[in-house]
Image (cartoon, rainbow, N blue to C red; front, side):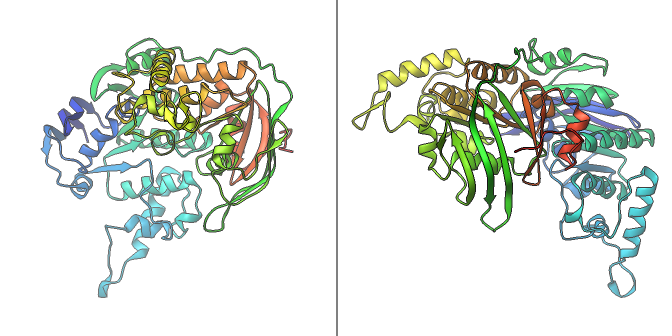
Length: 506
């Protein structure tokens, strides 16, 4: 089935998320929709799937104009979507999830689970999925859960399949397996739309590439295009994709974490007996699939977790259980993984956000009064130094783009006298150009002799920045390895396996 989008426009108030976008996806091809977060890719696919109604433009299947009132109409027409965040009921079996919303019944109105099981087995056999129809979804690995999503779509005779950022929660091995599955679907005649911002994956599987920037199609490219060419299309200028850094000149251990254990509010152990150290002048990257304890680990170091056992010391001083204020005052800079929730106050100005963690004393507060002139001078300097694109220092931070918001957080944290810098998902949701800038500042901080922790689910980022890599799985550190460790080995560790010779966290 051929899919064609003609002049799709979608507005949200004054914001035009999609601006007259046109593209065609032929049967048996993987058409990659490439663009940074916020470019309008997912909005376009939500229009296709019937979740949004376009303000202008048409959707055509085999040259016939469609009118989808909702996802049910799109599915009935042969369109399936594999969402970034799986739409599965964890306590249901695979077969129950597959039939959900399309229930078949036997005589007497009873659900025909055998028919659903047979459908799962038939699709699994056809594509080599190896999925047990009676397995509980909550007990399946993430990669297998994604296969269940694909089976759901195929069980409804999807001829056009949309993958929306499908590798965000996968290990490298699971990502490779997904690429194989996508090629099998392509060879079976399925038209595939692959939404991503990861250049390596695009070049690996795409038949054709369409690049979207700020809601518009800005170009098309062949899979043979270089990463630099694709990045330039995405950002609108040449981008340095390689992190330039000299070998670390590591000193003595500055941060020492010993037998750290964190229990969440419902009593689950989310960080379990974690020990490691970070030396002055080195970057320790913490890798792992999202949700394996990385967030809680950084929050425990910062004093944000209330139920902590073990010991965290910085420069020989125990900071375990200290308040966030005390930890920051001890010289810890922190870039949280969710800048909007934890890093900024959107209604506050750029200048006010730049002084958030120094609002109780100098240099901007004296005897309870704010020194406006000094703050303004500081803000103007940091806007220039960190290339923050803003109309002025009195602009609310919430009006800035994601990359510029992240630069505000970085400017604030790196303008203090730091003894430790912790950056969690430092480039999440920002464009390639801003990533280049953020990486440069992180390396500069290391080169000033500051110990740095970078937490990232992006293996390319981990490999680019790290001097050593600690891999977390289900709340523990599987091992600590050199920065040049192959992706395949890191992928195995992210799945819980520790290859022979790996350094244990002591």
